[in-house]
Image (cartoon, rainbow, N blue to C red):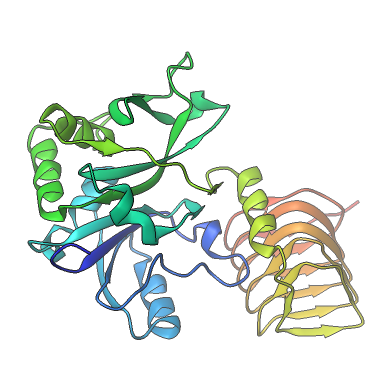
Length: 319
């Protein structure tokens, strides 16, 4: 694609993004020979590096830490040292999972300079939206009060000229064009549009938002469709499909499912659990759980509840 490599920049800034911990973590987008992945992370980026080395050892990957929380445009700009002349760039944010045919990038961008992927939504007030005229983006409005557009920006961007894109990121940062101290990509794209560059806003086939607990659980249900995997130890228990029990986890005297994802190192005993994500090294005993998300190293005992619990928590429910 283009004259050089396709570089894929993934902004993985929030620790343990739930979208990446359900069942088998999603594969990098479009990982073909000649492509490279650039991960922009926080201080927990070593977890991503370890995962990539284990699952995709053949991929060429680069890792950069965003040491200052200066916004997504600043994070993407940290990829600049790896972008060369002739490279095109695909930018993917980590708080979303998408379904689309990336082999169509070239054909979709044949008469423009890039693609800013979109999805029509009813709750447009929650999102930045793309405003179109004659098939091209002419404006971007953040969380509009009126339905000027329902095409939400979804955190997936394709630039045919990656080096030029990095130049516009540099211009935006040099100009101090921030919102509440952070640099955002719409400001960059509007500079490009003002200079005559053109962008289409193709719609995704599916957009799985991981921005809120309820959408994370909805995404978990989507990812588990037709993927019932029991890799751990299950003793005297009932599994209601679909369920993913990772290797190294133990389930005893429990009813699990449907739509439950259990990460490695967990122990679940004497419990009934459905529609729930349970992350690494968590212990659940004598619980009835539904519509819940448990972080890493949680220890949970007691009565029926709906839970959204962060890492390294100990909760004992007593009647």
